[in-house]
Image 1 (cartoon, rainbow, N blue to C red):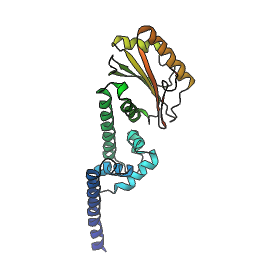
Image 2 (image 1 turned 60 degrees about the vertical axis):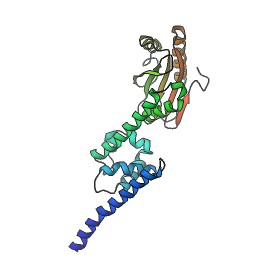
Image 3 (image 1 turned 90 degrees about the horizontal axis):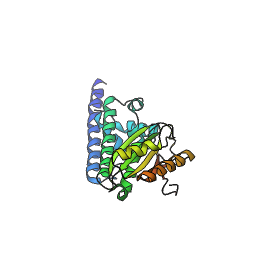
Length: 234
């Protein structure tokens, strides 16, 4: 019996190594859609030695709902999943960081109005899975390039937390010609509220008097995004 147990223990790592090698080969040879979401997580979790990471990957997807949900989850929440160590959390968070940096570079290198999808991708990666409401103002120069991504604060979007005059004054201080308001809805539904619409219109009116154009107000949610400009609300 002891000999059989030794053989099984020795065999398991070799099987795991073979599976990891096959997954790596598919990644390198199969293009961007070579791996399913659970396999992407499985590969990231290879940071955990000598462990079958497929069940861990599927547990993470079950708990957080999607690949993006896993990568955006807080470290403490990730560690509540049985088998997820600090090493595993680090592997997941570095992947999330790389995704954000790549998306941000796409936004910073081109005029925003000419690379709208890149902007939406960046904001979705950064905000769609937040559990708190976050308000940002993207200030643009005369070429519509991003000069400041300003985190206004966290909390409900209203005039108690976002003052129209302060938003415009900050733009004047840095020489901005235009801005885009952004906030997220943790509920997942990006449809604008009455308060969202009224505050946007007040900021747009303040900007008109001082020469700063409000291009849009984007609301980001897990279920998509809403543009107040596209809805004719600005």
